[in-house]
Length: 404
Ligand code: HEM
Image (cartoon, rainbow, N blue to C red; front, side):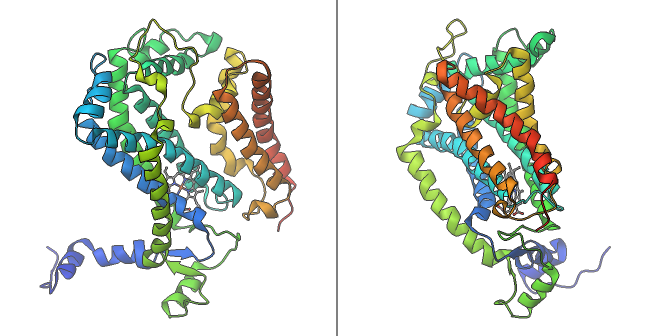
């Protein structure tokens, strides 16, 4: 057995057994963060906090929610909203967080794209980030099924129909996914399991990989400056904090992060108390009815851009375009052929590419909400084709980019 000295304090006792002091050094006081980063670098922490809010509010909702097609709707709209003390608050917190988390994810993603934070050793950070995006999308979709309202049912119907894979007519796949011919009890139970167990576990594991992948390449900075973290850390430790280009994660950087988190929480709770409606579709306040199709079926705002890429085309091509939109961002580190990991404003054509991509995705989102008629469907088609062309153009324009 290993030899243990008598400990003189609780800290020493824990340190002997769990190396808590080493852990604190590695994860906090000697985890080096560049000084020259702006508030956009706090979005990762804002995401982590929002995920925490979703977990806690979800646990409270789980105490009264019933995953049964006959009682699910009432357990949410009657029991939780009216009978349980502050049930309405937990529901609004959960719904608003589920929507806002996507806004922050998109900001976080586009910050990464603008500053080239997916390049030069940061590929795994990017790929794990995109897997988190996919996992959050699956989490949001499965959660949307649970109140068993009209939109839950019909969005479930439309999305699972995608798995009939166009004219391939993959017999039986849709039924296998639903566990029935139409969304019914088997469907609700399995989406409930995915939402409360399997996907949250996957998200936790992916967050672990995402954070771990940051460790060796370190966090990028807003000038694309390359410096030796060990040299800068030595300066910091020697007391020359002014000329060192890094600060410690805790408490230096954390206090900056927490300021942004505090401002975010003011905005978040403003939405929860005064503007929660945006996160809930009025059609979903009608119970699911398999015999009454709603006039317009559209997803939540954060799925609209990829939905709009699917819509203007015939079933087969639409499906291919949709699949393309879902996976293409994962390949960004490999499609961008330029050696420069610097802000987009110093990268010539890539700068234009960045803004065109952002505007195109906003246009797709706006068109996805409107009925596919007249001018809207034309704009939708142009924006969908532009999305595909922009990705085809990316390797070409970046291949010829000069080293800066
Ligand atoms: C939703 C869960 C996510 C959490 C909790 C999370 C958390 C974080 C944190 C804490 C950081 C370090 C500080 C910062 O740059 O903000 C970070 C960095 C990063 N994340 Fe995420 N992230 C998530 C999703 C994503 C997604 C969807 C992407 C896009 C694909 C992504 C891409 C990146 C990149 C490229 C960096 C490196 C930034 C740099 O080095 O400057 N993350 N993430």
